[in-house]
Amino acid sequence: ETGVTQTPRHLVMGMTNKKSLKCEQHLGHNAMYWYKQSAKKPLELMFVYSLEERVENNSVPSRFSPECPNSSHLFLHLHTLQPEDSALYLCASSQEPSPSSNEQFFGPGTRLTVL
Amino acid sequence: AQTVTQSQPEMSVQEAETVTLSCTYDTSENNYYLFWYKQPPSRQMILVIRQEAYKQQNATENRFSVNFQKAAKSFSLKISDSQLGDTAMYFCAFIFNAGNMLTFGGGTRLMVKP
Image (tube, rainbow over all chains, first blue to last red; front, side, top):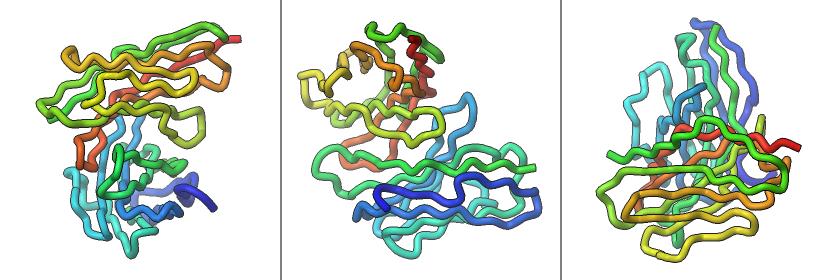
């Protein structure tokens, strides 16, 4: 596998379910990100991890809980979500500090639908 | 706080023609990077082109080029000889030098017509 992978690609869950999204990067990067992409809204940064430490939590509700066990893996644990949380969740990675331009590499996303 | 604005929600262009996508941004920073990302339908977001703010020369990548006007805080993307595979959402994005938080615009949906 190359680049940034995400599983599952599609997820449908009820408001009382607990599920997790997984992201894996094969680029040797040391920073990973979760973004939320909703229809008709700009991409919203949710969480940033650098060297496995959370460095940014962009006012995200506690029903979203990130986990970064190592520099290659990032999880987003979901519980008691709301229908408005339905969106495409994108994972990205980058190398920090960057020798050039802080380019982030994105995964294909998980399409989440909350019923 | 930084903001990135893409004023064209949707655009279309005939195959082989040229199209320009607009992006403006607002920041008080002097050192930063600007990007255009492409997100094809149901496919991964990929970087199209990047521009370092300290460079006056506009970046070019094959058929893609930018018009970077730092004083005007404008960063437009020109696609020459448009191809059907250029059909996608295009996002303009901004990041500080030595930062790790990308700020995205709302996107422009480009349709290339045969």
